Length: 387
Image 1 (spheres, helix red, strand yellow):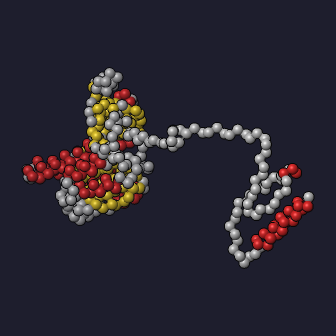
Image 2 (cartoon, rainbow, N blue to C red; image 1 turned 180 degrees about the vertical axis):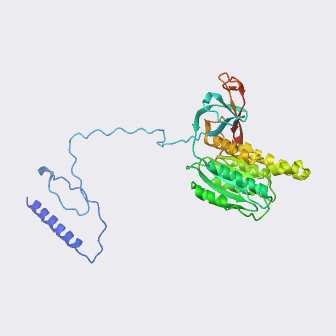
Image 3 (tube, helix red, strand yellow; image 1 turned 90 degrees about the horizontal axis):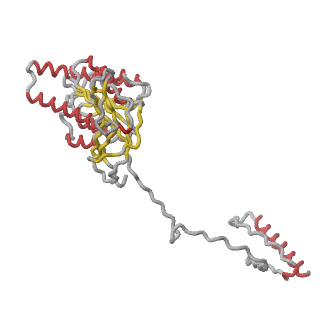
């Protein structure tokens, strides 16, 4: 009993000494230490205890039967490591328009089994089909050069006709080009801003029409814009002084996803009058034929449409067709059988078939056959392994 009393006195003394150290404000405070649990008091028959400073003596183990050890968790594999695997399965979304050749009306009501998709000659399985009708995001790319007043007037009339078809939710940017590309307004849904940009086209400066450079820069900027985009290219189609070649321009179009180009040629009436009067030479005639072919190619490669109007009265119908094509689309989804991410260009062709797999035939209300056109991109470029 005497020894126990001595032990109590020592512990209290130690506590007073620590309290005095903690109150010393001249010395830096020691780092906080984790408080150790206070051991339970030992039974009477455990014998005397002594203060051993920083060394803590464990109590005697009780002679009770210890609880069973928990079951050892089995690893998922022999080495005890957990592996995860990510499978990147490519998916292709293809925008498809089906329009009647005579009226250019959109054909609704088609089902997934009516579409046959062939990629590099191999038939693909369409996994889903949906019909979209959404606002548009488009760039009006206008040729504005001091070449000929009839061409400039056609451009202004065509851009004004497209402006009148815009909806409140549409986002439009306006850019012109001559020797260089000029951005008149960035993407906006403010029709007043777009109208002011179009009305500013009064006096052109340079006579060069560098169409390839302007279209390349436009496509390059559009790669930073998400979603489906459109380019309304209104120009003569001629290129006079571009740094880029036609081959590089076509390669850029192939490498740019989610962009559809619609082309409207200018100067149709002036060209017709000049050619009929015998004033257009063979070289100039060949230049315009090449320009028309390039404009058609730009549109066809991206699933767009190309127009060569001669009269202003044709413009409302032209931009009505463009709006019908843009705002109503089928979106096909399929998983390509070629799953390699090798960056190659895959050629795609879309057909309409009936329940027996034969070409789909359409009829009007009187039972007469109706011709239609399927408008879609001619292919896409596969991803690279690092993408």
